[in-house]
Image 1 (tube, rainbow, N blue to C red):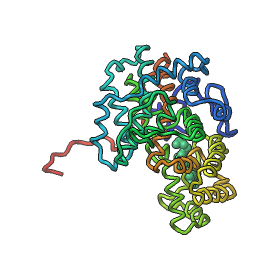
Image 2 (image 1 turned 120 degrees about the vertical axis):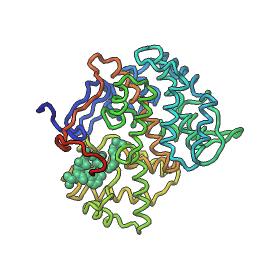
Image 3 (image 1 turned 45 degrees about the horizontal axis):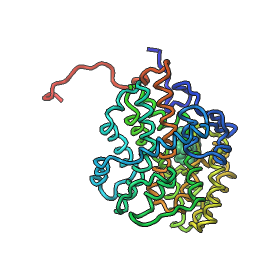
Image 4 (image 1 turned 45 degrees about the vertical axis):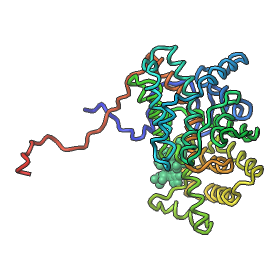
Length: 392
Ligand code: CMC
């Protein structure tokens, strides 16, 4: 018809206008609502950044107290929702458990179904921010067969999550404040990244006027894929694979360059960044600090450092402008903190949640929004006549 231009993967198509996050991929710049990621990572907190992304401004002290208080009151899961976790196989991956539980929130909060009811959207926002860490911790507890803990609302969101994940009922649990701070910082680094695959999914689903829970559940499923959020798990598996094969980094790089099927340098490359991912620089330093403190798996860190060094000086990667992305070093930190590999992408989802919510809300309140409905280039058969079954 002449009306359609093919842009597979939306490499050059803007799907919306947005005032939330700015990226300059050539210069390695990332800003949330104008604030450089480096400053937010160093000085801010995850809840403050959530407020910034969702409401557009850093909160005043009073606003932050109120926001934190509201979230605190919603951390509990309905007992019936808690029972959902019993139904999954014990070895279930926690990502589909997470998306299922978030999807189920629509059934528990049927007042959430109208996306144009501002008060209900606010309530759904708070519910989701409050409950996702509880759901994530239960997904973990389920996978290791340990009892669930109720949230302790005297704790901060991040401490509460760590306690529900690693604590035991009736046993005191005290999170190391430095680790709480590092985890909070990692959540900040993941909090938004404009029109990535999962955020675009959240917007696409929401563009049909589906509610916040349904849209975010879809985003979690998009994040599960190894080319997106699942990359943090794949990186660690890659590093372990290299160690198992004798630790020959150069040989692995050769396999990547030869494009052996299924062999990529995971945690490298990015659609938008064609220079160093600013988040990766912060994470690399945090990985060194955390491993020095906790005595994590130094061997894997050494392999990662050697891989990065080999790639950054190799023509294949230089020509294609492939640099480490945010996922390259995060897994090493999560591992040192005690998270099993399968929880890594769940941590990404917890971080990305305020970004998904901010985009969904921006999309719903934007008068320019239309239902997402791309066109296609048809490549199938031209018209042909039906052949009766007996004649085929
Ligand atoms: N290892 C080896 N080669 C690569 C890699 C890699 N990680 N990434 C890209 N390339 C090559 C690719 O084969 C292609 O080469 P050629 O021109 O010879 O065909 C060239 O670089 C361009 O890559 P592309 O696949 O066209 O780039 P894209 O923008 O479509 O894909 C990406 C971006 C992130 C999916 C890709 O770089 C990748 O698969 N990386 C590994 C997975 C990963 O780390 N994902 C996390 C992304 S950041 C956080 C997040 O979104 O979760």
